Length: 422
Image (cartoon, rainbow, N blue to C red):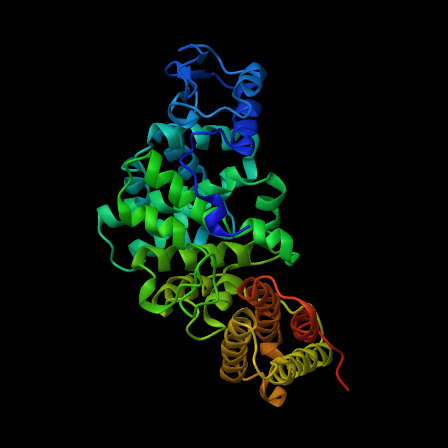
């Protein structure tokens, strides 16, 4: 699935979003805020009628006069007050984000009070809070981290509130893809087909907010950019450099920091490393607040001995060199545009990984002191995860290949896997 496949005017109810709304309606009061008509004027559901499974049956394969999301409301759903209460609980908790958030607590609480919930967003967030609680918790974390990063940069009240709104809404498009794909976003590795499904959600979020709400264009654009990276390695459009908006850069850094914290035992040290390990991947100014907050966190603890770490580093070194060697050999005399795109992007990203390797000092294992093993582990983990990102980026850039070209790309992707070396 490509982003263009997600283009829609929302006149046909999305089955995944509808299923989430119906699941939430089992414990929440979700009603029609207006009569629901199909495109031919046939009344399907009456105003003030609670939604039920019968609604799903009546909507099947029907085009609607107005998007379903604009015709429903959650009477007992998420409110600005409940969001602020949830934020207070997050600030009072002793979690991995605490050292980053607490210095900005006053600004975050003030900013959350100014977050506006459009009726469509209020419906969707209410459904997600009930049916996908992990996704709702992630949205709250994102709202707080985005606000903290903006405030740390000197953003005023308006900019902090804008960042918090964008953080809260950044994954709204995930409600429109199968739940399994959204949950896969937290996985360490994704197969390419799952990745193809997942990459459309920023685009769907952009369409949803742009067509069905009146949020400012800066917020809508940032939602579309929250998985892009400055070096062009992100998705769905592989934007780079000045193509990314300032708020989009902030959401991109926020998303990577939270992704790093999903791993068991992770702390702000890991989030800080994730933003700094590959030069030019994220806005360097956004790594500063995380690095500062990490200084008050307990030092990292090594999982393995120095000898085991050196073995892991040797494997990573071998994979990087092997992938580059394979890349140089995989292009035929007249490659297709898809294979050429994949090769050019992969070469760029591998070069950035090697640059990160060199700047970290991992090229000289003797430089890793006993007290630096844990930090070197975090760098090694972050670089290793990027190899999987390169595989998926290469396959997405290549598109559909055939014959020898597909075999060549497969061989390159195999070379990205951790190897024992010789």
